[in-house]
Length: 96
Image (cartoon, rainbow, N blue to C red):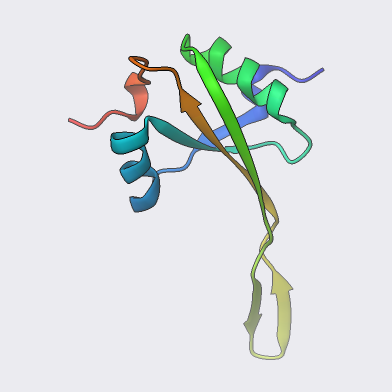
């Protein structure tokens, strides 16, 4: 079984995720491709000491990229949108 730090790779900070954080108390993370919702929930609760209500998972396919005649692809990713319980926050993602 993987540790919590192997499951949660990094937070995803975008305009949309910042908007969701303020209005709906949802936080986005890039997670391990093989992790399921239960493992993600336990990892977030262990790392940040918060109560998680719900986890939504999205598989993102890598874009095709080209440089001259050479073709390639960016790697596939998995994103988890975690809904925190009412009154819970993650201080590491708070701005000044």
